[in-house]
Length: 307
Image 1 (cartoon, rainbow, N blue to C red):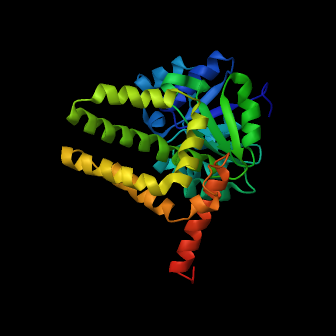
Image 2: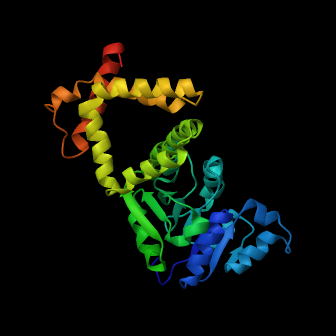
């Protein structure tokens, strides 16, 4: 299988499959096929068939037919359907196949999927890191697994933006879910901060100040400032967060995120990182995060020596 002889198919054909297919077709990939349970049951005049035709995709009647027509198969099912979909197609997969699971599934599910296909077909855990309808095939897709490099080599010439992060199935899904801790957490912090600002009558000024603080330097530098600064200055920041928490309570605003932040900073202050780094912020986040992980592991061992 090479880029010139690529036989490509989708397992599942929803919104993501449609937009990926449109981009691949426009980039010159022909003969795209797909199987979906709803498509197999849909009447010829169903909108699903019309969208498939628009994207240059032929809908097939079974997983077996998909395996006969495609060597590189990208699953774009719902996360909860990832393993059931794999089990339905597994009997028809052969050593020439690469099965790429791009559903938003649990890390353990992707690890299990890799084991299910071990010695039978190639497997790639893939995670779509943005919005496909907005970005199409240019959306960042991270990939892990033994065949992740091959997946990138086959589809990068058609414009897919694939980043290989590990040869371990589950790593790509873990990256997406861990990233969500930050991205969704920031949304929660903004909502809590701006609610308090709205209650006090200074929302526009607070929003502009937050934006200016983030925009003033490359975000990679901001990450280092936040992580390393907290490691060294956590103890004195506890007081500031206590005052912030008191203000939010007085305003009747949400305090959930602020309570969690204060608890986190108290925990970091108790790890002795200021002394470890002699009161100076490290030049990178790595030593800080290594120290945090080691401190938490040591604390768990102390609580439960049998672990």
